[in-house]
Image (cartoon, rainbow, N blue to C red):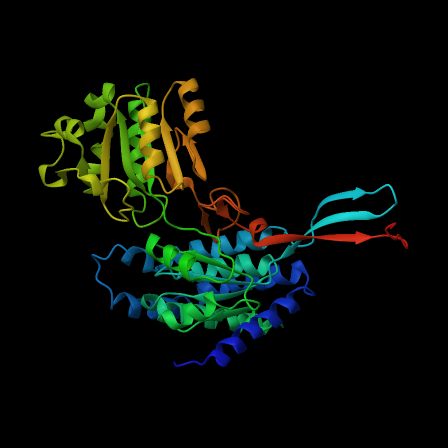
Length: 421
């Protein structure tokens, strides 16, 4: 659909009006609407999956994005469960974050408030449409969704269902708006100064770079995850094998999946054992020389290749992984500092001092000791769901949930105070 600048402005202003209307709605009413929507997701699963199958038919199953695009009954049940979790949480809007009384009797309160209109630009992940809506509306925001063309049928069916439930509960349907596919609408959203308060990209490094370079409105970066796990000289083999297998193979197409195993040289003899689960899952390993020698004849030959420079610092999003050998914790930290996207990093060690040093020195949104990076997820953190994993340091970092979708303002009350000249 061809749209003019006036058409886009009309959409943005409709979302602004809907956001203003949310300010007068009770948290209880919003929660009831979300609970009903969660039920409707299950009731309308056939229609949602049919629309998704049309999108899947246009994408090769070899595409790393295929798994992200795919919906099935189990995933819809998980989406509905996350929505019920969000509905059960208190809205962050209107919380008094701090309160002080000045000597003249003036009361200053710092109060959390919604951003207003939040735009989300994302790729082939239709579950994001549900997650973003539930978090935005629960925190008092309207949302404008700009999904990829690969998921346009899925997103259209999803937003159609959301808008019908909104209307049934007396909300403005424009609390959620789906933008047309194509970069023209992305450009309009990124340039909507004064109409859109915040844009959050979810997707590949290329998408995030595009948004950062072209946005005139404020941006919070989320998404790209180049994740490492360091197996220390004091690491436990059984724990390590389980953590590494889970972090890599639980779901390879997500941003918290393991991309590079770093191993201390003194534990190279354990590398075949650490990678046994990866072999069973068919993971292709790009190993440096020392790691290659340790795995040669101890790992399927067709799944083992020599690493090159591009093997490191790559978000694979597939059954591929790099292995790097280091002489020390310090060298592991240097490798992570060079190649990390500052998303999720982990260490496996039984030495508490080493673990503590790793946790302190690693610059990432989420750092783990003896835990799989697969846990970097808003629902797993008890946040209900997430709008993305922020890898920047301003405003929000890590899983962004309800509190991060509010900013704040100062509310000052008094009884006729005036400032002396």
